[in-house]
Length: 283
Image (cartoon, rainbow, N blue to C red; front, side, top):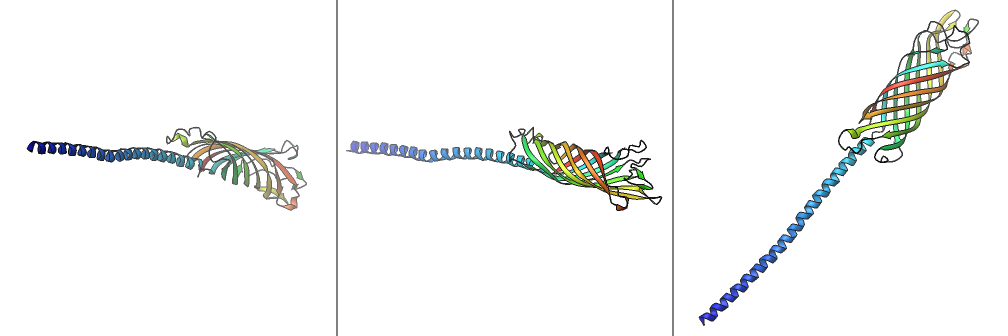
């Protein structure tokens, strides 16, 4: 009887032990499977979020660089003016050209790109609009007046002594903007920008000539107002918000007229060529 009871106890113990092992394995499987799955998900999520943050940072960086399309140019300019064939007279004593002494200019405008992202992450095609193009020029003194006389009156403004012009204009035209190092993210080189442009503009000028007009044997200051179309070619190289540039302007013809109607000067047609070197700020 004791043997039967002992055998039954051993069988029950073995069964209980087997159930415990199965239960622990099941419980371990239940615990381990969710834990393993959760760890893998977290790794994937972290990797995805890291990549997403990296791509977002790069996108924000590029957009901040690409978005600097408003420009302010501070320029040093030299403006050469030359009369047309009709002015001045054919006398060899009268100069038909006058050289610049110095000049300064201020340009303010914006580039409107035709697409949000550059072609191949390199090229933007856009349209520049400069709503402010102001310039001041002073010219070298000349010994002889420029013009011709009828009696005691100077029919055309003589450009002698001190000569100054103040102009204001606007221009518009296409531009190409290159970002050659966009792929070099966060290296600093991806901030480099090269822009080439062609502009067509219109400007008005006020000319002042000291003691230019003969009035009853005495000299007095002369003034003239001119206006006309011009074309401009240029380019600039910048890094982030600052850069340098060069521009050549060609005025086909500027038509000047004296402000003093007493002298019936008519319209004076002057050709002008201007070169500029400028410091550029972008924001």
